[in-house]
Image (cartoon, rainbow, N blue to C red; front, side, top):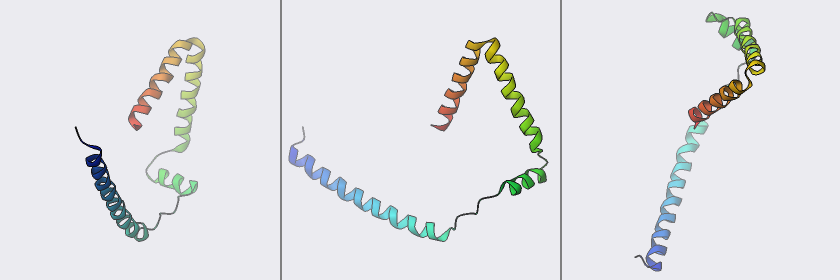
Amino acid sequence: MATKAELEAELKELRTRNAQLEEDADQNLKPDAEAEPTAPRKTTDEIRALLEEHGIDLSKAQAVGEEAVEEFGRLQKDYPITALLVAFSLGYVVGRAQG
């Protein structure tokens, strides 16, 4: 079993090493942040133009989204427990994908 003095010495070494690593990380991040300017945000018109360039019709995508919401509303009225299970499952999958 380690003595208190040994543990304190090891803790001191770890703190010194941690401080050195933090200092190295700060030095490595500063040049990168200055070298890369942030990209300007695209406006909705620019995004819409890019989508049209690639053959994507935004109105169709919005219509599909509205239909999905209507379908889920009907499912919720007709089969409330099924809708609850679907919502829970979707939330679980999305949560696991992000974590």
